[in-house]
Amino acid sequence: MSWLPHVDLPVAEDGNGRFLPIMVAVMVFLASLAMAGALAVENVVDRWNRDVTGTLTIQIMPAEGTPEDSEKRTNARLEQALGLLRAEPAVASAQAIPIARLKTLMEPWLGSADLVADLPMPRLIDVSLRDGVPIDLHSLATRLGDAVPGTTLDDHQLWLSKLVGLAQGLGSLARVVVLLVTLATAVAVVQATRSGLATHRPAIEVLHLIGAQDDYIARQFATRAMLLGLAGGILGLLLALPAIILVGWLSADIEGGFVPKITLTTAHWLLLLCLPMAASAVAMITTRVTVLRALARML
Image 1: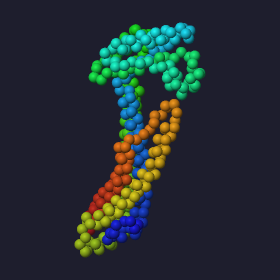
Image 2 (image 1 turned 120 degrees about the horizontal axis):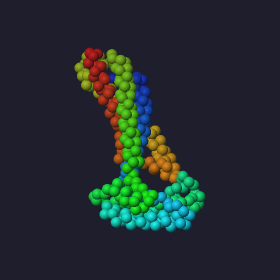
Image 3 (image 1 turned 30 degrees about the horizontal axis):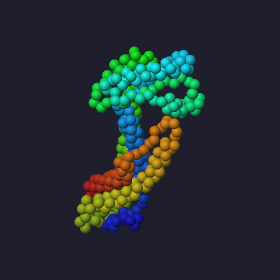
Image 4 (image 1 turned 180 degrees about the vertical axis):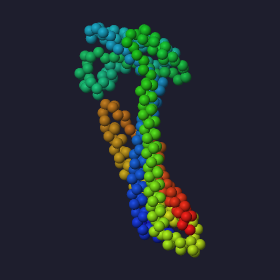
């Protein structure tokens, strides 16, 4: 490998480090996928959290009766609920979601809007709350239910808490995967380093006889491991990037809002780009520690 710096030990001539870049590439590939997945889910939950923080959704069930009578009575309930909400000091705005918008939202589950044109549709009210103004949601829900039968209040906390739990679980799983990948990389580096030490033992003894210090010999192995680890890390990241981009593209291509758009921020991409350097550092440090311990026992 001509791109490696000159060293006094012929470490580039043996095959002990030949498979090190491949092993590091596989490890960085797996770590990149795990980290990207966790970061993407965390990003989605953060977006949802920002979108629903300080908002409520009020649902008014359709009134019974003929379609015309049901629509008239439901609209009356809607106006009554809007009046009650707009009189609430903590409510910044309360807007009824148009029927056309509701039908569009229902299309992924019920099909074309024409198929649900004659079906009684519940009415939804989108409520925005004022920042810093306290509100008793239980009291508001009770008053709405008493004034407008068939009214329910959703503060989004139930499903959001489940999403946050999912994101935290995936984040913990990703950290475990990255830790296991790091440990596996370190073990592979230790084995390769020990094999190299055994191969070059005569040369190491000669270097000691002419006054070479353990730190100098360890640096010979560590420098090569660092460069091999960096090369393998870059290869693993280059293999992982198309897979990450493909998953994002496939999620964006799904219609109907079943799966949110999966994206990574600039900071997330920079974090992924640091993985090859991290793998290189792990290889260098592990090799150096292994060589120093082996030399302490050898001589």
